[in-house]
Image (cartoon, rainbow, N blue to C red; front, side, top):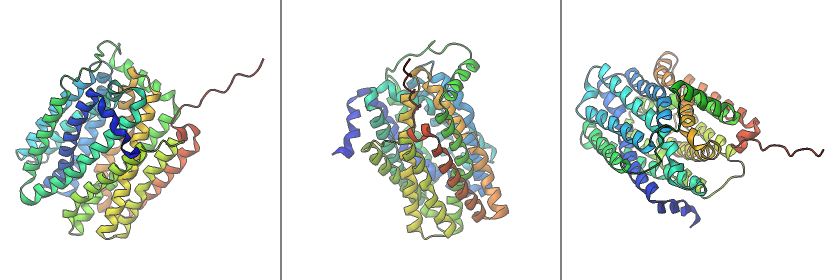
Length: 407
């Protein structure tokens, strides 16, 4: 079946090895998506939840450039394994009850977790072209998206079950085990040693990365779009969804909601793997706009069935965008610059997310959930429409040079 054609990339042994570890890790991440809010809200306030999530996001952004430089200098698998060791330790600390400690403790652990994620993310994005040939990049990105999201369908369901029959501590132990599995698969991957391939100071290497982005205005446009959407739309939705469900006495539905979004991402990854759009940028940008359905359902106080459907649609759009975007960067950016460009993408896209996560509960308390969601809906509309006026954005590629005029 064509819809399963992406699975052919599993014939590449090194990709298959990394893929197996990341599927296991995705299950643990999905467990934590449910366990962390549940553990924090059980011992602290909803404002404290925003502080913890904001700290984690802030550290992720702060570490991304270092991760990008390391990914362009060292074996990318080594960088990823080191980051996962840190996340394994923080998961163990939460499993030992750190969420019940004074707020400073979960905040510090969130900072460490976010820092490790910031180092890991650009290295993982840049590693894929080292594992598969160019012609298989879209399929590899699609399979990565599908399998990670599949793990996150099982993860939140498992997390919800563990919270129902046990404690959040047990859920964090499960997450620690999956990080151990990830480290085991990353050791010995044998990807390219990059020591010395990106010489000079960190500052110089960072400038080179920013120059690569500036040379491609369509890349810069999408990064700016991501910054605005994360601040004004996605961060508020991420914080308000569990809060609104708790206010409605339906917090037990939060785990299934997270799983439904992951299921939508699986469907989106399968759809984009089976289809090569003529204008991938147009498809990707419009796919992000599907989040409007979830905003509308939250505003209308829709029943769980409709809200769940909108969450599936959101996940579908996220996956379509992510696969198109990653494949475009892999093709447009030189290999020895990929780590830094993925890092800049992380910094630019997530730079203001901590503010969004931390300020959303404050704004919701001061003005109500409705106005915050309305601002998000308007911002989503504007940031979806405006970028599409740029031809390179619609193509997700540089403008081809015009033919030379006849003499």
